[in-house]
Length: 216
Image 1 (cartoon, rainbow, N blue to C red):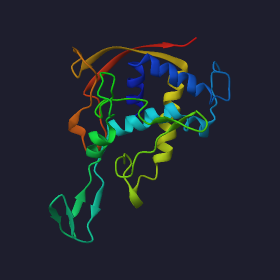
Image 2: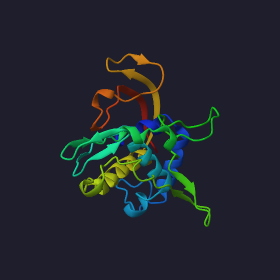
Image 3: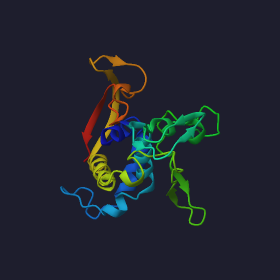
């Protein structure tokens, strides 16, 4: 997930600049310090930063939580019998168009299968400040759900965002070219490898060549 966020920021200079400006508000040390100190609770709650992570998890996390049926259940005309194991792939609700696609049909719309870092942002009507949208129940579960939801999700969130914050603060990152697994330059965007579906974070189907410079 850390790599995917850096990939998205590398190919979107405006989003990268917005994230950099936002994370600076969570610094407790000078920006140019060798060892920066963060206000961690503030950092992980920053609205644009949080939206980017939530969107990345929506598109790049594929798992199949399992449930044991304790009673017969009819779903879409199919009868599922008590005692059977049911797999709940999160990929379907994560990219289900009626839930995620904007009603706007203009060329600037953001379809469900495309990354949009601002998808989970809204403006607080009372304060005018940016805030985060909470996904509707049943439409978003990158860490599973219910009593078996991943207990390490909060640590993982901090780990990912701190890693990205340090990279963004200390380095300029610019996308140069998309290459396949054999190093051949490809047209279009870097996508995910479908062969890993259902087993957690999806791997890229190639690499994104980047130009990385230390910020002075």
